[in-house]
Amino acid sequence: MLKWSVQALQKHREHPLAFEETVDLEKQLHERENDVLSASPFVISGQLTVDRRAIIADLHVVGELTVPSTRSLNPVALPLDFTFTEIYVDPTDEELSRFPDEDMLFPLEGEMLDMQVAVEDHILLHIPSHILTPEEENEDVMPTGQAWSVISEEEYAKQQAEEAEAPNPELAKLKALLEAQENDAD
Image (cartoon, rainbow, N blue to C red; front, side, top):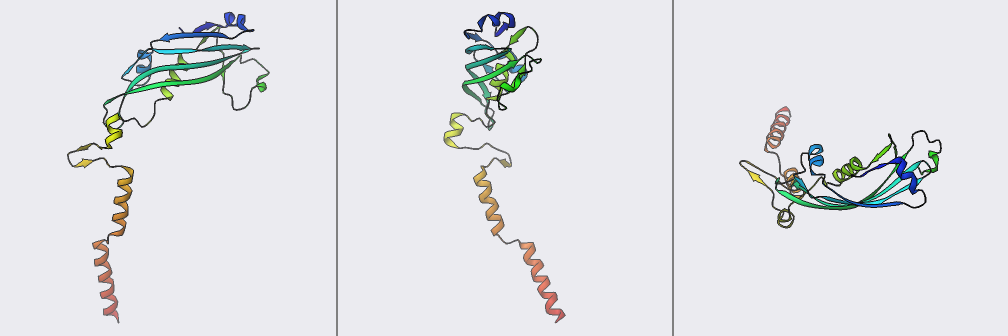
């Protein structure tokens, strides 16, 4: 399950090792992130390329999560379809400068390459911070409760502008008092 022996991968120096696996990650994703309500099995396909003492993993991940709406907490289906690349290197490799600075390099630990945690990481990173149900997106209805309501940023800005334009009655009283004191001083 997304694990390969480094020794077995050395046999693929000439040609990349192509693979496709369907993996059930629901339990692991929920343990790492409570907001994951459910997850379909994920189809992970890609190839592993051996380059000297490095392994380049190009992966394509397809599946679906169910997560709560950030507005109402109602369940929302979140389809995911993305690719990512990771480069695993021998930490003793002295030729790491052959990789561009923008490449993120991961140390190859032990005799096994386990891509499951990397896949889980990327799935969790692809959960947006703002998730709405289709109804919430279309209707733009904000939740309300007893003596409270959620308003949009635009509505908040409008309220702030109106409050800034409205005269403050306390300041008007203070102004009148100061004017009266000036008149008495004259």
